[in-house]
Length: 179
Picture 1 (cartoon, rainbow, N blue to C red):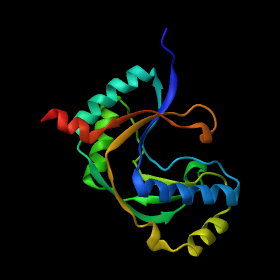
Picture 2 (cartoon, helix red, strand yellow):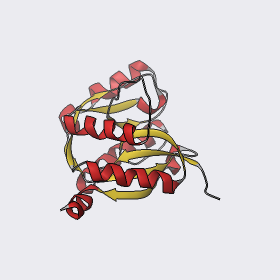
Picture 3 (cartoon, helix red, strand yellow):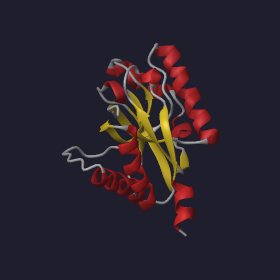
Picture 4 (cartoon, rainbow, N blue to C red):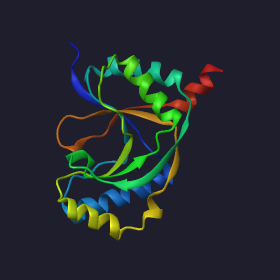
């Protein structure tokens, strides 16, 4: 029998960008006693099914997209736990096409507008406190560009600190295999 879980599809930076963002997230986590998580941009959230079913669909997605550039734009916050403090991602054609292809492959119907972002802090802080955090930061340090070469399936069961990629899919390698 195949186990059914809840998964998210994440775009995860790599190398020095990953390390830098991890340090920032860790610093906020310690300072505000909030969950620690790995840097990522959620492409799709809350998929149910087996890891094999989700993987097959990700293979299909990866075969349709090319590596692309992510441009982090500006710090922001909302009154949502998972968007307590985040960096907005520029809605480029490439990220929006990846999202549209993903929701098509997974047969997701949604009325919500996709807002790509990279969270820095999960939690429930007061608006004034989040405004103060943003004002205290050197904004130019958060305008980062990086290439997306990997897509990860992440099991999102339990506490955010336990969320780790279950499988990675290499977009660049998939592209090379198509040639």
